[in-house]
Amino acid sequence: MLMGREDRLVNPGEALAVVEEFIPGDNVHVDSFGIIRSSTLGVPVFDVKSKVVYVKPVKHAMALGVGFSVVGLVSAIRQDIVNVEIYGLVSVTPTVRWVAELSGVFSGVIPISQIASEYIREVYDYYRVGDLILARTLNASNPYSLTTKPPQYGVIYALCSRCLTLMEPQTPKTMKCPRCGNVESRKVSILASSKILQVNIRRLLALRRW
Image 1 (cartoon, rainbow, N blue to C red):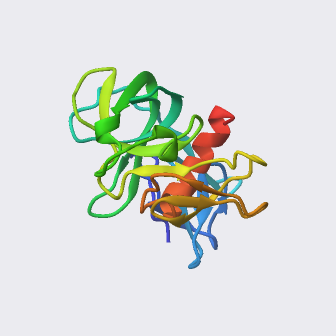
Image 2: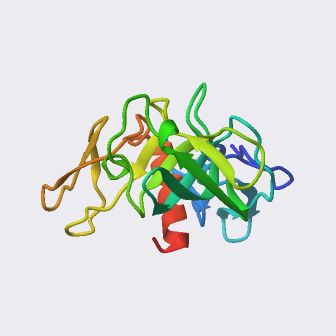
């Protein structure tokens, strides 16, 4: 049973075909039911001759509006501000969904007052350079003012400062290295363990060679 067509745009997680009919190619994955699903925003391609299905990624060139949820990399930290390079767009309500990788050059800043809903003594207790975060836009022009106050926003991925291993969420305020056991303070997003974001953000990290 063919679920997809080549004349449409598919979202991450969208069903394309079943493993009985096609072999999964690039930018797709197979779920536990044997359904081949897209792993990115793009156009599906069904090679009938070789029985392979894959997705051609589509990068969006767009302007962001107020209230957009974005994926960004912390590029610099000052005493009262966090600089962020914005790379992707996601939806966090009603369910978590990857929307698009951004092809333009977008930057953002998080004032210390927008990091968390509490008094902040030291920015480094919440974010560090190299952290990949979820944030929400507060304006509609580049560079964008960002906030990470709500619980769904914050660190998604962070490397251990000791051994550079990818750390795992432990509490809303800490992440732990599975290799050396090092625990570091962060403002951790409650979506840090989302399987949907794991698939897409790991791909983004690979592309950016982070």
